[in-house]
Image (cartoon, rainbow, N blue to C red; front, side, top):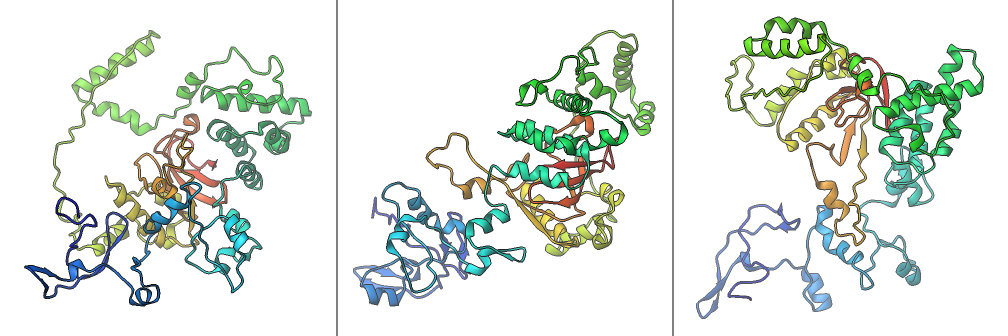
Length: 452
């Protein structure tokens, strides 16, 4: 007791059913019953009963707390001590009657709620060790993942996409053995050069240098920034048009955008003509356009397109209206690009994604993120907590994907190639270390991209 209150927060509340509490611990069913008098104006009921196991009480003559572990967070108390330091506890689930106490003390300890055979098996293949099994599942972050990603891309025989993949890896993945990757995948990145031109190896190298350098320039980088072979002089045309101007010139303006000019109101037309006059006369200028969207306006939907709310059934009706006959149109790019469901809450987005992916034909693949906090040398931020963070600008920890499912890019990877934040994609191939996706929108629609 402290200040007249129980520090364990008794009495608890009456509950009809056991449920998961907000602090990761279960809240048990406590039936409403008649109180029992303890004398001196004191009485208790089911709210005061501590969870216990009669058999354990009798065997050990000691009170032992018994809780149901229905979530990984429910055993956070044990993991806190596993990582605590020299006085941490050591635990394991042991198979068979034999127990080597010395080895038990030396080995790391994990809690596993499933069978040994299941842990050793993945995709129908049984491995000899747990480490090999989890590596095959992609649960281990190894230095070989970048190499394996390029090997998977190489097998698809798309040199132009392989070159872009290497640049994406250089920019975003910080590989350590850049020179080794260059030597191993050089011949595969120049296969289309050999097909188009009868050139010698030195010319192939220069052509590859030029293409890679142009791609790196889009991100403010250049060949010299990486551990790549020496760049021969005059290989790169230093007098070429700057990449930022090339990027703007490469933008394809749809006819419908040009037709919208005639529909501008007076204020919009004044702004449009002012900017275009400066461009036509080749003058310089900086413009700031302020156009509030009017987010406070309320819109009443017509009754014929509104879906009455009837719980889970209404969500299924919405999905059927938005994505009808998914089993027949999963690979249909024109069909997928014309459809989307918008919702402002991340939890709703995840729920809808899971329900829609379940309706796609084919095998489901779960892609897991590697979450870590830089400089967290004392493991203050546990993996479970980092995995639970759902931020709007990032994909969920577990990303469920099937072949033929639509995707959306959440960062600018290569704007000139059409890979911008918000670009819609279609999954054409699933690998352990990369995705083969098709661009659905913009002037680059139909082109493939390898996403590591």
